[in-house]
Every structure is written in structure tokens, then in C-alpha cells.
Length: 290
Ligand SMILES: NC(=O)C1=CN([C@@H]2O[C@H](COP(=O)(O)OP(=O)(O)OC[C@H]3O[C@@H](n4cnc5c(N)ncnc54)[C@H](OP(=O)(O)O)[C@@H]3O)[C@@H](O)[C@H]2O)C=CC1
Ligand SMILES: O=C1CO[C@H](CO)[C@@H](O)[C@@H]1O
Image (tube, rainbow, N blue to C red; front, side, top):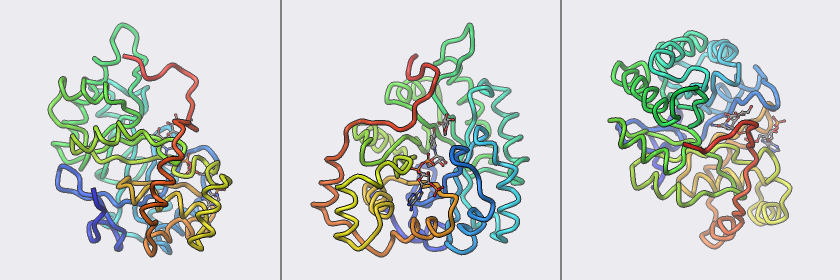
């Protein structure tokens, strides 16, 4: 899947979704881990032309983002806003309510992308599959009504996607999953592609851990780039939407300067071979079942 110019805000390449929309390949992460910086978000929007924001109810910054978006002066139609549904809101009615609440906190009338954050539901008396299906039916309704212009999932394995396809109508437009040089789930990437689901990668810098790896440092020197730029460019060249987070303006600027160079095929292969299936996101409750 090749990134193409034109679909994204301000010239950032974008990947086409199954519904005819296009998602900018580079966004700004806003996870609560490591804190939130108003100035950094405004800087990303205003000065770097990053018009894709990835957030979640769980991150607790949707209202803060409303202020940052307003202060940036960037128009709603030039933005791509993704937020996510936390498991405490799963289920048909709760999902619709949670979406409206996220829109209210963000100060927007629609979301560009709404994701089910994790496959596990934690609802007693119901299977995870059942809750995911009910939740997804509400997501489909939000999509049909235009409140969510695209809908998707996050942290879903192939088995979860297969079940959803059996249980529901709309195939998720996006699956957002951990993706960096130590964690490259190629089977899942290939499955998503076969179903026309855009693969979005989170933690592209492995939370900063990838930046001190000798191979990445060596490649950064070779290209006269920084380790972060190598990781981000690698994701993008692999056709993966990527959402690095930084609370520092100079790093945000660095992270978005990735469209003026190409990693050679042999170096892509070298980076691809670094995969050791090592995740940096570990949750404290059981996941991946059902
Ligand atoms: N769907 C899901 O379940 C999940 C989604 N996400 C999403 O993905 C986003 C990205 O993942 P995240 O966990 O933030 O991790 P990242 O891999 O983006 O790494 C962020 C860390 O790297 C540092 N950093 C950023 N840029 C640079 C740079 N150029 N040089 C050196 N250090 C740098 C940041 O520190 P500093 O701020 O000090 O610059 C921060 O500590 C999240 O913010 C969130 O939006 C993340 C986890 C799970
Ligand atoms: O998006 C995320 C960021 O961090 C959270 C942990 O507190 C995760 O649950 C989550 O997947």
C-alpha cells in the first residue's frame, strides 16, 4: 500500500481507507503517559502542519485538546481527529453516549475516526465477543449517522477481526496496534491489508527505547538523520500510519521532517529484521482472550 500525496492536511501524504476517505500517515500521539503539553500541541498544529491528532477518552486530555485546537486557529475541516472508546463504555447504548461525550469534550461535531480501544470488554455475564459485537453495532450506527466519519478498532488480533466480520456489517476501516522495529506483527499487517483495513502503528519509537539501539543509531548516522526520524520513516515506508508523541516542540519538529528522504530497500530489510516481538505496552489486566 503506497502512501499518496494530497489526501492529508497540508501536504502530508495520506492512505486511502475503504470508505473513500484518506488518513494522514503522520499524526501526533497524546497518551497520558509522559504528560500533556498545550504548547507542544499548538506548535504541532500551527508550525509543523501536523493536522492529525490521536487521542482517547483514557488519556484524559480531550478537553485540553479542544483548547489547543482553538488556540492553533486550524480549521476543523483541515484536521483529522481520532479518539477511542474505553472499555468502561462498551455496549450499544454506552458507546453512543461515550461518542457524544468525547465530541463534546473535544469541541467537535464529528470524529474523523473512532476506535474501540481494546478487544477485552470486562463485562460480567457476557462474552467479550458478544460485547464487541454490540459495541460495534453502535459504532456502525455512529458511522451511518456521520458522527464518526470512519470507525475502527485498536489492539485487535486476527481472531477478533474475523469474529467481528462474522457478527457485523461494516469492516473496520483501521486497526491501531503497537508497531516499531522491535514489534512488527507482519501476519496481522498482511491480514489487515487483505481486508482493506488500514494498519496504524502506535509507539513508533518504542516509547523512546528504539532511539538508543545501536542499529538505529548507525542508520541515523548513515542518513544524516536522527534515530526518531529513522523509526518514523520506516513505519511510513512500510505503509503504516504512525503517531509519535512528544511534549517538546523541537522533537515534534524533528519527528515531522520525514518526507524528504527515503530509506533504501536493504536498510528497510535490515530494520524489518530487528523484530523480536517485544511490546512496550503491557496492561495489568488479562487481554487477548475471547
Ligand atoms: N491504541 C493504543 O492502545 C495505544 C495508542 N497509543 C498512541 O500512540 C502514541 C505514541 O505512543 P507513545 O506511547 O506516546 O510512545 P512513542 O513511541 O511515540 O514515544 C514517545 C516517547 O518518546 C519521546 N520522544 C518523542 N520524540 C522524540 C525524539 N525525537 N527524540 C527523543 N525522544 C523522543 C517522548 O518524550 P518527550 O515527550 O519528552 O519528547 C516520549 O517519552 C500515544 O501517544 C497514543 O496516542 C499508545 C499506546 C497504546
Ligand atoms: O493507549 C494506551 C496508552 O496507555 C494506556 C495505559 O495506561 C493503555 O491502556 C492504552 O492502550
